[in-house]
Each structure stands twice: as C-alpha cells, then as structure tokens.
Length: 228
Ligand SMILES: C[S@@+](CC[C@H](N)C(=O)[O-])C[C@H]1O[C@@H](n2cnc3c(N)ncnc32)[C@H](O)[C@@H]1O
Image 1 (tube, helix red, strand yellow):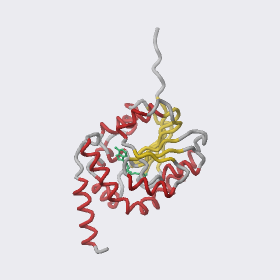
Image 2 (cartoon, protein in one colour):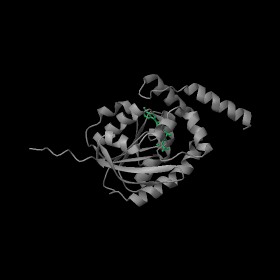
Image 3 (cartoon, protein in one colour):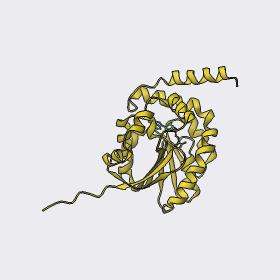
Image 4 (cartoon, helix red, strand yellow):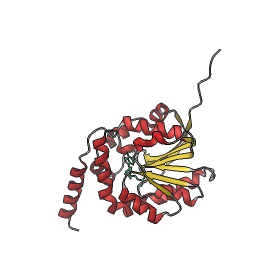
C-alpha cells in the first residue's frame, strides 16, 4: 500500500468518524461505532502488541479465577480471551459488530454480546465478580468516563480492572489517538484516582504494563461510617 493511499485512507476514516466532543451524545456514539467497524482490519497489529501485556499483568494480579468477568468495550476480545484462558467465566460486550465477529471466531469460550455501554443500567447490581475494560476510557469524554465507571462499580461485586494509557505515548501512539478522536489529551490531563473516587472506587493496586500502558485494580470505597 503506497503512502498516498494510506494517508488517504486514514484521513477518510478520520473524516467519516468526524468525532466531536461528547461521547454520551448519540451522534458521536454512532460515528465511533462506524469508526471501529471500519478499522477492524488493523486489529491483528493491535492484538500482537496488547495481548502479551494483558497476559503478563493478569498473571501478576492473580485474581481468584472463580470470579466471573464482564469485559466492557471488548473490541476483538483480547482482554476477555486472556481472562478466559486463566479460567474465569467471561462475557465481553461491545457495539462494533465487525470486531465482535472476529472476537467470536478467536475466543469460542467467551460469550460476546453486541451492546452499547449506555445500556449498562439494564444489568443487575453486583452480577459479575470483575468488570474490566481495556483502552476504552481515553477515547471518551469525562462525563461518559464517569457514567461507565459508576456503572462498572455498581455491577462488580469485587473488582473493577482498568487498562489504559498511564502516560503519553510515542508519536505513533499520539498519531493513532489523533485519528481516533479528540479526548486523549484531556484524558491524560485528568487524575485517574479522582475519577475512580467520583465513581465510588479506590485503587488497591496499579502498575505500568508497557512504555505507555497502566493497569488500575479498584475496589468499592468503604461506606462512610454513621456518627451517632
Ligand atoms: C480502543 S478499542 C479497545 C478494544 C479492546 N478493549 C482492546 O483492548 O483491544 C475501544 C473499543 O470501545 C468500543 N466502544 C466505544 N464506545 C462504545 C460504546 N458506547 N458502547 C460499546 N462499545 C464502545 C469500540 O467499539 C472499541 O471496540
């Protein structure tokens, strides 16, 4: 593929995505869905880079395998697949059908559901042991991050496990994120700890997973004590 063709493809995809500033906005969500369905062809490259990092991090965390997992914004299911290979009963959800088709082919042990994250309110309180998400938060605005983290805290009985950028990436990462949409700089500038706290979560463990990646393991904040 020549560089002119590649540049044209990238700018067309960015143009079609045409992402504005509110991820909880229905127009932006439908552009995001179109964007991820269009870029499904580059996922093998992303998977080669992220899968070993997910695997190493989950080995280190060694969470009880009896805990069921719901992986939000699962994409092609690589994080869900690593939880499943460790023995967790695992479900993945996403709204991009092309990515889910690949996920179903690659990880038959995982149940995949096509669903928009704005519909999380239909899932019962504490119905999964672990709610996870990989590289979702940086792509949406602060309001939607808060909404999804609050729902994750409500649905998880034990842990919310978040993988995402912990620091700015190199020029390739910055270019990819520029193509994806406008939220990455504001995401990096915001405090993860404060955002988790606002959602009722506290960080119990976190560490880097790569030059730019980080994992945060969160539990529910203790209920405030009632003074007599
Ligand atoms: C950068 S990809 C990460 C995919 C996967 N978690 C991974 O680690 O490879 C972000 C994913 O979020 C999904 N997504 C974004 N907004 C969503 C929404 N409102 N509902 C469901 N999925 C959404 C996209 O379809 C895409 O698969």
